[in-house]
Length: 457
Image (cartoon, rainbow, N blue to C red; front, side, top):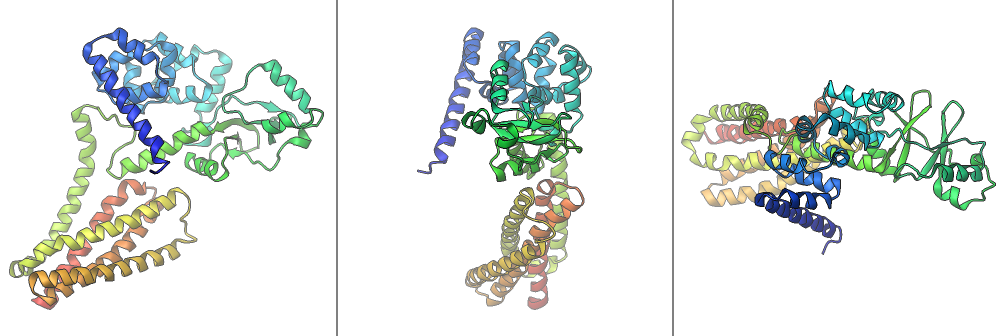
């Protein structure tokens, strides 16, 4: 059995069991038992259950959750679901929920809370903390500044390790996921990191300047969240400093924030393929969901009409050779699959910053070669099958030729469409699939029916 699949399966089974249990309790109408059940769960598990339930059941669960636990649950929910619960939450309870959160989670929550409620929450948390949060909110939530926590531990290079240890003991606690202390000068400019492992194992009389790692560079506050995640992955970091343009330390990003970014990007890519938003509520009202999906259904309808128009150009050919109508879907389908493989590969490469103008030409040549090889391989197969099926070598040869043309064009389209979309600022995952389908359908039908018109009519 695949070892990596076992934990995932176990987690899925647990989530299914929890959902079954809470559904049973809600059906029985015992809010006391619901309260006892929910209080035993981790906030992330509660958030997952809430998103899995219909709005009426969400309200019943939300009513039994104490204010001090609401904050962590809200930041674990998709925006649309969280917004719906915030609307039915008492203002005093929401303030208590906000006060229970650490700074980075509180920033995430404040991004969801609408005005003027956000201002009231900010007013309740004290001037010093409010000023820090306003500073954090000035950054976009998809940047390093938007991800960072303001809870950092800093030391000076001219201090001894013993002084640092005494400072930590006096402080009594450290921010979560702390693996390094950040070394700064008197103007708070970042100079390096002091790993806790070094602090605890090296001679206490040693100076910070002798023990710190000055090769670590801070992350610019405006760096996109996707690039930050990639940096964490490449360097196996648990935390990283965030700095301003002048090198001043602003905060830090921890790996738990990066896990959220990776999950959100994966959700975005997956949902965008179908023209959906990853923040949408699975149980949103029927009319709302229908409106959202109608846009891309309309776009797809236009592309379908275009493909039908191309077929209509060869209606005379189809009337005389019925076999062509039967075989047409094969060409378009094979082109669509081949193009999707290339499209997925290139979109992933763009997300991981592995594809750029420096290697795009080589990637084009490679994908065209793959398309040609697969085209010729499967052209022989389908030509033989079609020739035997309809007792016509000519139809088999035409089908095979059209297959080669469409698979090569599909490879070209699958490689070029994401790059062109990214260049004009459109998400390749959102629009790439629709454009690719249009190309493979139109080229496939045009190649097959066009060849048939030329050589069989």
